[in-house]
Length: 122
Image (cartoon, rainbow, N blue to C red; front, side, top):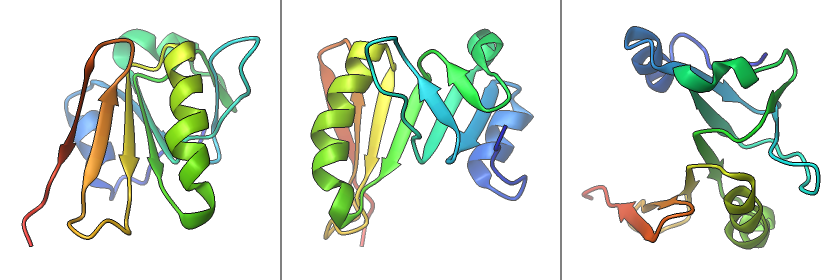
């Protein structure tokens, strides 16, 4: 299983609070029989769901899946993966777009009517 380095703040926070596991690509997430397996750039699995973690893949949805958007993945990340992750039961989908002028970080809580963004000051 490919986990974040112990020098990564997300990994440290999750480890200190014993709240689950943070994994990074290449680590496949399989959300359903009729959905393709995907490798989010970063995924978080809560402690309650760590039983779904296998050696090389997650057998079920992540609690949080995050994608760092690149020019060639923009449509796939914003449309295809959004739809697949929602159908597959991913609780939160974060899109990190390094090209956004104000370093906007979008997040969507799937299967609920809520979305928003984090804005960092200049």
